[in-house]
Image 1 (spheres, rainbow, N blue to C red):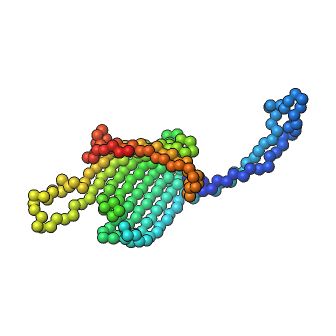
Image 2: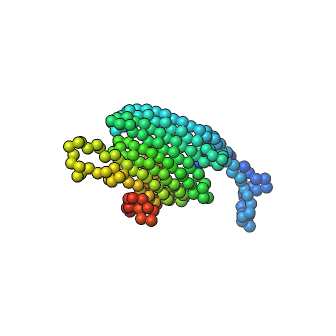
Image 3: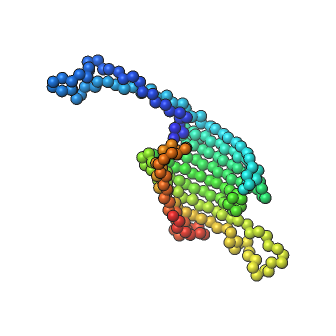
Length: 231
């Protein structure tokens, strides 16, 4: 079900069956190591996931004011290869229009068991100080066992926050031309992350441990106007 193919998977063990000619009784020479005494059957019942779903909603929050959300997903979007498509949009209005648009395409088996995701997004929310952010990302993700996951993400972001208009009485000396707007920049970054999730009962944990370590490098060889190393 984690691959979005099945909605429900249920396994039921059946009664063991005895193989004719193998009574399982040890003799003085010992038990035959090659004898198969019983077979165990398992009945597996699966329910196929519906490929297309949609959801919508609305509400009010102090950060965004009145807002509405629409989400569309398709778990078999292209070429019948279980490529998953997702589109999310949210609009809100408080002092001005805020929005979030997010589109993703995910290939579960891009390179073997490595998952690949292409993501495009645009947002301007009051919770982010009304910074207009355009972003494109490509993510490679690989699970290692039951609890470990590695992610490698490249992102390019265009960030802009318009400067509030200055009053006419503001001296010309401190006014900045639009091309020198300090609230506009681009970020080209590469991020590596390792995640360990050993929680018991994922949705409502009662024990276990969750750890995450990230390293992000921006600028330099990756270009962009902003440079940093963040852990």
